[in-house]
Length: 194
Image 1 (cartoon, rainbow, N blue to C red):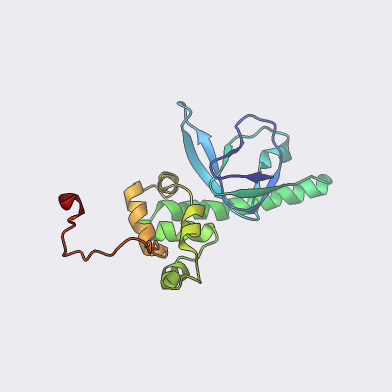
Image 2: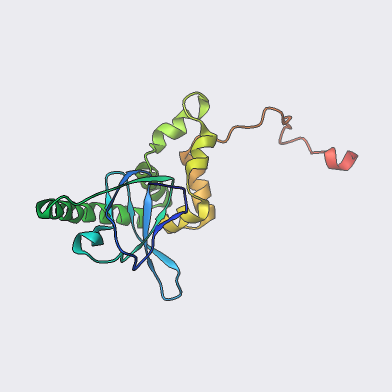
């Protein structure tokens, strides 16, 4: 199954199906009393989501695609397979809890660096490759990221801070070739002379 960024994958109390994330990042939220989503954990490629199905229980969290996501349904073959999947989900839990801790503590720069790595990007390579337009398509990369608001929610920071941090971590935006360059010391007379 393919889900686009911000698309709901499943909701709380629906009959659960077990899924494996094959690409992208899924956010799993608990809903507050006013139906506001509260981020609990992120799932990355290889992770199982909908583990409630292993206990024949409905979904206890809401899932939404943080990035474009591809999921593969996992069919339980036997009781032994069910136990194996339960152990896998149990072992996955501390790793994702550690990720959430890293996304919520420390500098915003370290939080964003970790989040970009979880999304499959290497920030140090991205920033240094900015001068080489063939190395990385900065526009495509920026378009693949969640919105500033969503990134800010994940790392518990203000959108403005996330924007400044991304400017340090990602290749610079390409300047349009058609726009004439005006030195910063020269006043812009276009509006005055018109």
